[in-house]
Length: 331
Image 1: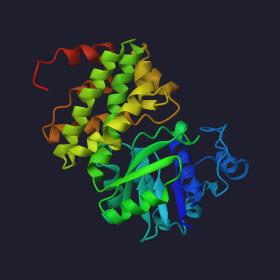
Image 2: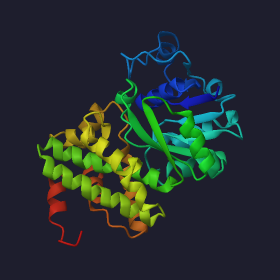
Image 3: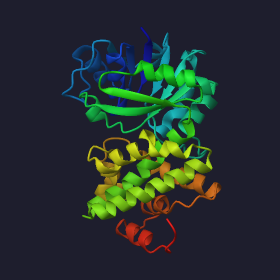
Image 4: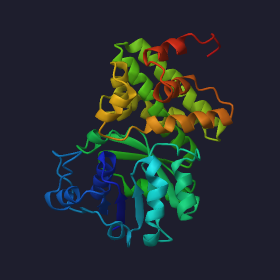
């Protein structure tokens, strides 16, 4: 039985921990709240994120990172992307040299513009063959009640990608593996920004034509940036690209779409942050994504407009107006 440390007890971390447990792993979750940890271990529920779902018996929780990490074969990281580096540094005393790291995070680090796999490698010294990324249409509230879904597992080493794919395969969770880590991570990070823009359109009462246009042109932005960074363009036609983009843009379960929807309905950025209970990765990742685009000379007009709305006071209602007023061009 593979021993897994799940570092994070949020919605997606809990859902993926349940997937791993159902697939035959022994999983110990780490979180900061003692009451939540006790509820997971003894009552078999996460009272904050999934209060109505009974968790597997082979899943327990602790607030002690040492207990979670010691002896783990696989460490799954499900913390907010901007806190990853600090957390990994705090956990350095418990680090095992041969462990495999799995990132569930979909963001770009502020200040460095690093992808999450790059942060993991820099802080832990793990080789690319010890790091995997999971991304795809992974709405946690659907997965935890065993609604069927597929996902992408990426690692630069095929053996690692296959290992993690096998580790999380169940009758409701179907992974596909790839060695395109760059494409998988860029797809996961940028789709949050596009979903936020789409949420603004939804909040403004705009229909399917407007949303379809945003999603399609958003996919073009994702593919342009990923290709400039060395990704395989085919990746963006798969689960980590269009699959994840459609789910995040269209589902009311998506926290990034919901964030945008609140803006579109008239809430200020500050008000929207205050009513958002979960991490909205697009809020902090949109700026480093745009910086990456500028560095590589990639045109990302939707991302640019989202940055202006979130961080420079542009009225959300003007986002689509600015986008529509761009010069015509070949598709």
